[in-house]
Image (cartoon, rainbow, N blue to C red; front, top):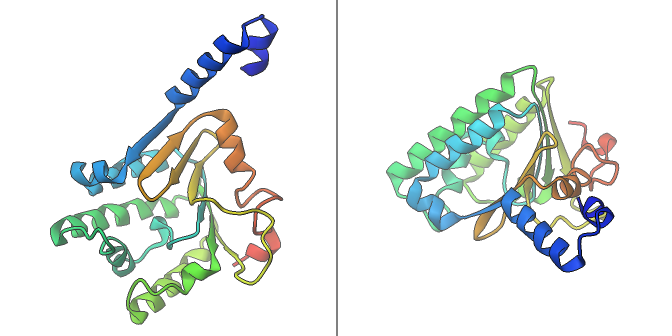
Length: 212
């Protein structure tokens, strides 16, 4: 788009305004506090709908076990972290998250998860719950369309992971920060995350290091 605007003689000022408008149109930010007020289980349904149209999901997680791989107990512990959800809301949200996991068994879809090793060691739940969660990871890694990789804790990283993200085919990226979730369809932004995904040679974890 930048090259096209330059080729047709658009001034730098107008070009900058136009590109800023386009970027705003393809980027959406939603504060977590707003999602809590709306009902966090509804957000799980929204993510489920996005995943239903995704054939190849690539996800990097540096804080928690990815939602698609969580056990009910681990998921409940996650939603029990501050700011803690009310018990009824938490149960409804956990149930909605677990419903999403059915897509893992759809053979036509593929899933590549990249998790930092320290995530497997963080005690956000009871030891018994974490043990079951690790067993769940091993079980899911055996699915032919699921690949789970680890970023080794003691190895030097070729890049610094700024935030967790999920890449849906090559059309949509969802990133998470402390205060909000960002969704972008901007091709340049999508390419930025694609270069850091599990499939990329520049990924913090190579294919041979990630085999489960």
